[in-house]
Structure formats: structure tokens, C-alpha cells
Image 1 (cartoon, rainbow, N blue to C red):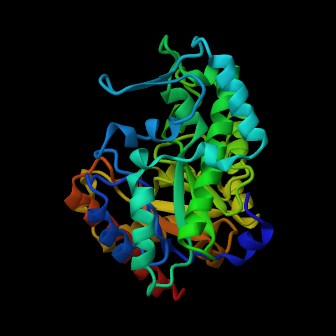
Image 2 (cartoon, rainbow, N blue to C red; image 1 turned 60 degrees about the vertical axis):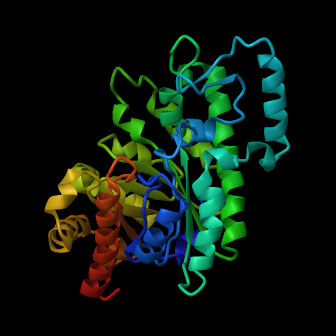
Amino acid sequence: MASPSLRKTFLPRCMAIAIGSLPHPEVESTLDLIANCLPEAPFWPQLPNRSFLEGMYVQYGEGLPGAVLDDVGERFYLDPGQADFVDQLTHFYEAVMAAELDHFAISRERASGLWQGLPALAERYKGKAPVLVKGHVTGPISFGLGVTDAQKRSIIYDSTLADVVVKHLNMKARWQETFLKRCFPGLPTLTFFDEPYMVSFGTAFCTLSREQVRDLLNEVSDGLEGLTGVHCCGNTDWSLLLDTRVDLLNFDAYEYGENLLLYQAELEKFLGDGGYLAWGVVPTSAAVDGEDVDSLLALLKAQMERLSSAGMPLKTVLERSFVSPSCGAGSLTPARAVRVFELTMELSERLRKHYKL
């Protein structure tokens, strides 16, 4: 959780932000899109179509004890049966205890959008006066369910590996935060933990308890100085995510906004305690072809006003809200990704004009 002073003073007022991935194979082609459509909130682009190494698990798996990277088969997994696994664990925990952030750096070959893109974006934003800079890390639930051991069992069910994963991702996030600050000095940071697998919570695919999930999300965001958020692009138990210490909840408002609004009491407490909502109302699917800023504005206005009708002042909802795509744009065509970003920017502008923010 960010400092109370930051949560109290930072008001996004329906600012446009985005999730991490883009479909482009090269960094340079993403930079103008980001700078033109997100004037206040630059982020570094994740480019999964550029390389297997930039996928959401491999990108953050570097340095994990027992990590095995099969480039030919494009498989990444952990093998705790390695002969030196105990030594790797010892070295890992020593680095965690000493807060050796550079030990957890994301390498250039796994994050071209970070190393090449973010410094170039800093140059593009010199005349734009951004107000925050955004980063992103795969969350521990999704990482732990999506990455397996050598026997193809999800590593989150191994208590040793689960502890390693959450500490590893926390340190990756903390290292990344320093990188963001170095490129955009003086700006607050926002770090998303992307949790697409939270849609499986409560099913046979995810047998973690509510307490386990909450503790993992709290630990992975611990120690960051800026704002933290969790992104879930499907339906889930929203009361669980609203009960964590993260500052922001990003959700797919296009498909699941009505589901989230069933949790009125939890939402009021979350916002009342200084939390933020990022309304992912611009669809990152073929559905975007049938939408325009007017249709999306009508949908979002209805959802925001419904939330405020139960006692939460609309002014509070608006001031503590961001506008975003429903998910990352990495699976779209480049043309659709451009449309998603343009609609996000236009929707933010229209909301601010309509409500005089």
C-alpha cells in the first residue's frame, strides 16, 4: 500500500492508462502510440510477439531457483530436483534479505520495451508533463498457477516454491520501480500485478484458500513506495481483491462491470479508505469494432452513477477513477490496438468534459 499522503493527494480524475502488452514486434512502433494516447501516464510496452522471452512468465522468471528455459520447445518451468537447488535457494534468500535489487533485474533481452522503450518515452514526454509512470509484473497467483515444475504441476501448491515466487516477484517489482523513477524522476509510480488467473479462484483449477490468495497479494506488493494495483480481466470474487492492501483495482468493466457492482459495500469501503478503480471499459477484442466513444461513455456513466447511487458520492467515484482498456492489447492486430488506445484517450477526455473534472 502506498503512503497515506499519496493516496490522499493523488486524484486521477478519470485519467487514461493502459495495461502492459502490445502486439507490435518492435519497440519503436509503440512509442508514439503510447505518448499520443496516454499524455499523463506513460508505461513500458510488453511485446510478447517479439520473443518467447517476453511472455508474461518467462519475462519475470529470470533468476528463480530451479528455473529451466527450453528455447527450442518454448517451455519455461522450475525443477527443484536440480543438484544445486539448495545452493540456489540459499543464494536467493540471501539476496532477498539483503534487498539486493540488482540481483532481480529484468534483463534487456526479456524486456526490450523497458530498457529501450522507457528512456525513449521519457524524451517524448518532456513537453507533456505526465503525472505518473506505470509498470507491471505478473502476479503471484497467475505466475504460480501458470508455471509448473518438471512434472507439470503448478508450483503454487508447493509451499517452498510458492514462497520463493512471491518474494521473487516482489523484488522484481521493487527493482522495476527504481527503473521507472530513474527514467521519470519526481513522478509517482504505479505498479500493476496482472492476475488473469484470478478468474479460476473458487474452481477446481485453483484450490487456494481466500486467506492464501490475500496473503500472497499483500506480500507481493509490500515495500513498494508508489501506488500498486491488481488487474483481473475476467470475473472473480471481487470482495477478495478489495480486501487486499493494493491501492487500485483494475477490472473489465465492459464485460463484468455489473458483476463488480454487486459488491457495493466493499467498493464503498475500498474507495472510502483511499483506494482507486480503473474501469477497463474499452474492449480488447473484436467487440471494439462495434463501439465508439458515445456507446462506451453511456456504459461507463451508467456504471459509475449506479455505484454512487448507493451512498458513495459521484464526485468521489470520479476523482478516484482511471479509464483503461479491458485487458492488454497483445493479442490484437496493431490496427485494433491503435483503436483501443484512441478510444481510451477520447473516453477520458469526454468524461472529464461531461463531469467538469
